[in-house]
Length: 402
Image (cartoon, rainbow, N blue to C red; front, side):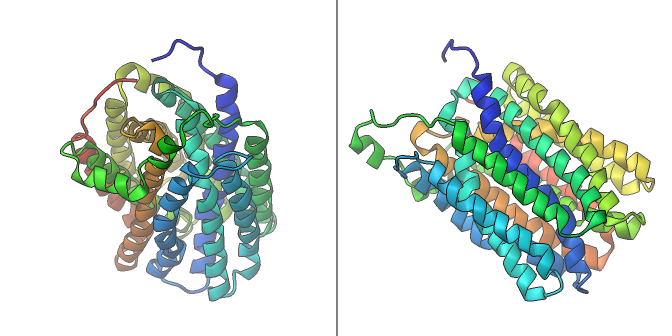
């Protein structure tokens, strides 16, 4: 543990990377499902089109994280991946609304967007492990998720408003802001100098498969339980996020734009609780704080199942946003606690392997359930997986605080 002052400036600069990522995904998850449903597709097929690209990303993204550990250029290890992926994601994201009336073309545009995001997301998140000591990571993750929350809130509120003006406008807006934000990271983040490390140390860093093997065979199953919990809570929330605007339009009679803006309450509370969540975890430990968040989220989604008033649902979304901050801010630092310094990028990839698998499972299985019942079924579906996540998290052994 070091006594150096906490690097607030560096943390906020890195937060622009999370800001850029968080601009795209809320627009993607709230505006694209209604486009697909308007093509006459079932909820199952909507979920499938939203997630089939993640089948590739589930394997591709860990590889990117591992390869970025071993990339050595004059720009650094991570920056070449940002320079390649961000423009690619922006281009395909802009194309989505222009090809929305063609089944094949919109699916290909979704694929291109996600592949571009996969190229730079793991390297961006890996900076959290590169630039901060273990005892600093919860606080740093709180700050950068604060920036991500700001991006999400801006995307949802502004995107919903712009959608009502013209369907392509929020996509162009999101792509432009994302590129500007990633540009700040490229300009201001200084990667750690690894030139002092002996070549044999760099070459002997564990590869991705070594990390998978370690997690699977380690007598201490904490890594396995943690990745399982991450998978479970993202299965639940991804289903809710994928179908919320369709739920709002179908069950509550709310427009797509207004439904998108309602999610701003969730994002706003994520902003408010981002830094406190990291500070609470530093004080009381990451595991208990995450468990409190999971229990609170479970109660919230069960209440949402019975609430039919938009105003009450808006209030519930705000409360759930606070509990989600407790989970989301502290999960990645827990993953880093299990990693060694040389393979942080690979462990970042494993984290996103679990989340990508959840991004496949949640919308597809949730969509199938919706087809059998109604869009209201997303709430109990989410509750079941949040409870499963809490059970798995309770089995994680805490090795050290901070």
